[in-house]
Image (cartoon, rainbow over the protein chains, first blue to last red):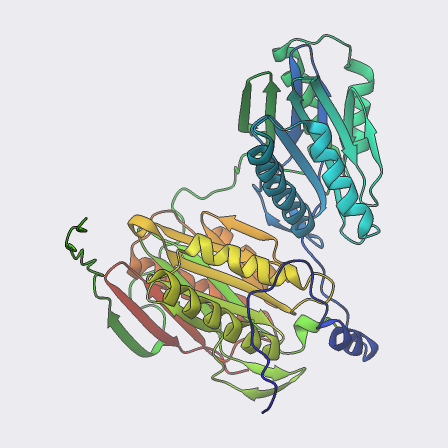
Length: 274
Length: 204
């Protein structure tokens, strides 16, 4: 009997079966595709009550902006959030995966997740792929040991810092932090400083742009301020807009299929007898 | 030459008022030679969910067959259709699984979710989702499509106006791209009907 290859849902992890074919294509002179990157400015700082994370919202595909308002601050746990820079698919996949692992761990232990747990899970995953999973992360959260802020590099090394920046706009943002950061900032001062650092990245780095997202994590409370600042509104919109009259486009054929409404039939079964 | 320019493609999906439109070109080429002018890039997953795939044509067909298989399995197990958001996650997972040897495709997913709310999304070839509220584009004509859609899009268009807008944006953009064109294929889906039209375009 011939062995049939069934596409069963896989057990997880990466599958390398198209690698040989793709290598053959690149030997024939075909360039591999470029992946969506988040050029990015991501920052984090520790203030008196917790941690504040900030990110811009531009996603690029080569030189083109493919998403003007993407989310770069990913949820890990109710008290832990992670900003991601690098290849967009890698940051999303790795933060989703560790978020699920943290949830399972919370069910197993019955306790709030610790930031150091997320850190160890992320760094061991990234190290095991030797930097090929290109995700540079700023991880921040508050657990019972206090507020924590860490940076994680694609090869798996980590730093623990009071303020951190990553991404192509990190130098612009770090310039703001180095001149204005001090210990014991209040919540409003912290948000203002983070917004300023992200704006510095948005305006001075070509890989970052659009809006500012901020996430404030304190003991027992997390506030995700999506689009906290919109310093780049669209100003060139024509008020009339384009309007096309019906029938302006030349059509060769039309096929209209009516859709039936799905009626859900609830069949009442007999009650179970003892 | 990039692998995405081997076959050529143009795909766009746009959101309207309780409806969506998804459109593609119809050319299949081998570099600069055109070998078909009726290639189907947009496929139906279920009545209210369509997926368009751009990129290498062989991967387009393989990926479509895998996705239809997964959806049919889901229908058998759950006895219902997949929601568009769920389907987008499935596609993203299947693409990311091949992170280091990817399918050379970029999908555009469009569907009507709960309460007939339109949902559109695109991904790069390794599954990085981009959810947009207005329009998404993919293919060799993507850069022109970004420009055309950015200027022609208006929020809350009815299905007639949406059809005209999406068709004009597609035709204008593929006219500026050698590798896509030869007509257009548009699906406009509302809660009550699906309107499928083929467009007359420049055949060069």
